[in-house]
Picture (cartoon, protein in one colour):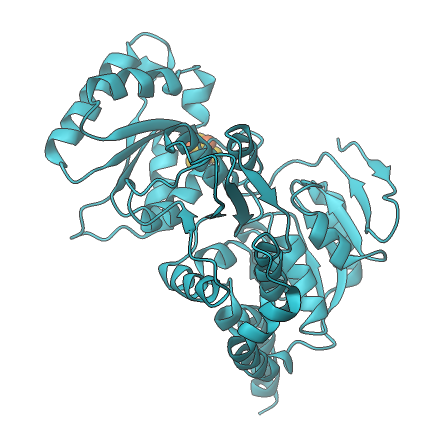
Length: 428
Ligand code: SF4
């Protein structure tokens, strides 16, 4: 049974409706797929069931010849019944793994629904194992369980577990920390643009190498590249860092506003940013204009899934001329999302944690041109003649920054173009 709480936000913010619907999304273990690609010398050891192992293997499409960088320590019936000492077994598995894989520089013990149900304390296990392997690598634990969490929160938990290991930053002098997993190519572009703005003290967290831990302290300015990192931000703020609130770097406008917010901390004006980045902005606008033709005038409905919904909706409405029917997100962090809420403005129907049944009834009533949703919901909607876009694809694809704006629009244009081709095909 969903509990509906409507609250009106003042001023130009959208009217937010909060529901307490059930989650119909992947669990946080899914984040291991993009995290293990990013942190190239890390290993993720899931302590879970065969279901967890299957989820990871099918989602990651494991390469047979490669040395995998994630695995599942399967909890058997005796473990689940509390008849075996799971800690002893875990110590043995970790020792064997580290003996065989000297290249691992960071080990994550990843909790799951089964390990949480039997209250296996992986944080304690990580501390104990860290003592044992002190000079060899770093070990931390986080939860990827699907109990009341969405798949992107796995990254939030993972990064939060690393914050205590970050070295102390200096008291004086500002450093920028871009927080959230990005593709290597996007990191390169962002570094280049920051340097064009005169900002050279830039760290990316997480970095491609586990030992590249950025310093954190009162001089640290946090700039989020991903919107689902509330716990990581809280942990960094506790270490003295200051958050720069900004729209997210999706689309040309969003990326420009993101750089402008960061540059403001270094005394660079918005007009100077626009001038310094004029070439990539013009290039991105030109590429986007071609894709936009397939999107303008079409309607879109977001079901709650990835927590990227607000910036995506803003981009598709403001830069691609789409009509927003409803924007739903699993959780709404009003602080991190404040600039996006202001950009969306009043008149947008925004739902936090929607109840699935009522949300689907609205999709069926409105029959949008495109529905953005999780994979499990997409197939039934397609069977009803509705076009869908899997939101998880947006996490696996490099979509941030100027040069990726057209690719991002292309991800939404593709299902609509495919539909048109099918329509034409059925007449010929
Ligand atoms: S963590 Fe939970 S939801 Fe995720 S695969 Fe394992 S059992 Fe399923």
